[in-house]
Length: 303
Length: 310
Image (cartoon, rainbow over all chains, first blue to last red; front, top):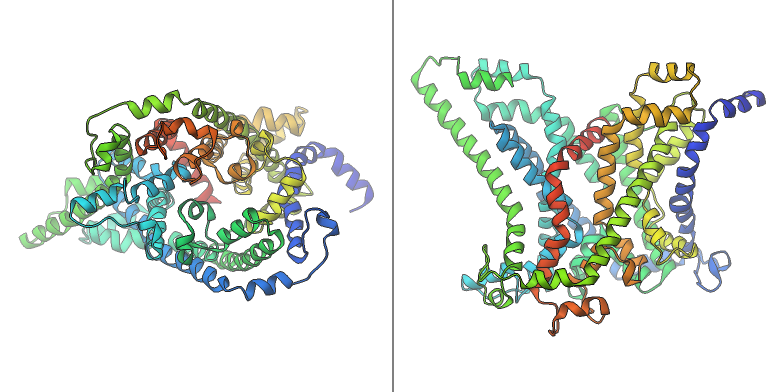
């Protein structure tokens, strides 16, 4: 562009530039500056000497991480939690949406849908608190039922083999209802003529659901599946931190919780940053690939 | 809607009696199955809440004796008396309300200020700034650098950091940008002809037209801020500045019991009685549960705006 026209652009659209400035500053401070701070993974970060003066150590911490005995455990736990979570959790909103679609009474539909979304809005602390209390060996209702039935109470949260089930069930309980929304939206977009011609051909409700509704949801299902697969290496730490304890680290520890422990609690900043960077990069790769596939299927663009 | 009408009127007359029966049986089974599934989901969803309420209304001894499964036994308001008198809870509540209200306003303002220029096709910086924003959705610095930045800015243990650290969600910027883009060009053009600046157009014309999406996104921000606990727990060490979720975390889940704040809930015991813990859950979740049915449709609309179109 010619120098004169740059000047004209700034004058004509000056408010747009001014408007974007505060958000820009926010992004720079809270997102891009920390991105630059990733470099501490390559330095021996010393609080006293600060960022600029810490000695450069290259990939030492990465090597340390790859030879860390915990590395495979973290990877395995992260992957298993996500894979099993998908296996059990992915079909539930789909089936639920199909079931909601079969409700004739509009009031019942509205009420049940409202109930199903509710857990999504309850805070993580409350949900995890409820889980911990319910599973408590002395005062928990699950063990109360077990004892009433004649069994011994089980200290669920101290046994590694239960953790995955607990976490995944909790996840489904919290988000299944809410995730039906997007499927319901897709269903409402299906052409009603398809249903009408199916009825003329003698299809009952079950056949309509199987041959029309489900295929109509397929594009959305595929996109959601791909997006979820892109998240395969990320497991949120917020819930696990509230639920786990050293006894179940063998199944409960994931990348993010390890970063939290070594980095924020034990202040090994450089090492934790290296772990975090590794996971971020791998995760980014997965997300990028999955989004490209989605885009190819969907012809939409974000920018 | 029409298909349902047709079906219930059953205009189609089946030719054979057997077909008619098969239709009814198959459909009825399917219908029972669907209704049963939804009923199960509703029961599983509601049961924890019902139990927590019942347990908070029962004496601790009943719970220890496994007598409370669904309904309260020997109803007592003791737990609620303790919780309501506990000053720390109301301080935390005030903090949460402050963080949520002010935080949401700040977030909405920054989100709108980011989304509007991105929606104007004539803006030369549009492409690069869009990338700048969207990139943050895929990649971020991670926990440790973020913490170190906040610490280096001397923002630890301040109220300000809670208001600002999660102010902008790039995802919501995109949603709002898409909404702005769909407002007809003629409105903007005629306003420009009348001599309005971009600033005036945004606040006098575009925003009033965008109230649905602003309300939906505002609600999402608000719920997110009300419920968030992790960074609040990391950043705030001053007990007077803690929001409700961090306080709850200490009451329900933290093993250290020595702090002043939670001492008065012990009532002489070694740990906080379970009934009091349950009562805390109810008291802190009540606003969400009560307000939720009224604002629920805005949330659903928000997902539609974001998911189907974005």
